[in-house]
Length: 84
Image (tube, rainbow, N blue to C red; front, side):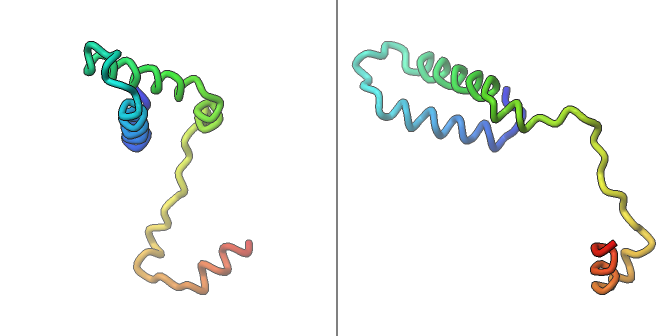
């Protein structure tokens, strides 16, 4: 639902911490209650401003690999390239 394993793990851990603090006396179906809590938290994260800020809508342009220079790695050339 979130598109990231790390975010999903964070939400699961957060949900279990919150569920641990809730009294079990008022809950009739624990599994359904946890699923509902988890779903609501996922939807809250997706609707949050942080989530909208982190989404990049432009094209993905990876850095080009300079294959001819891979075998002859020279740190001084890296410094010169960074100054340009």
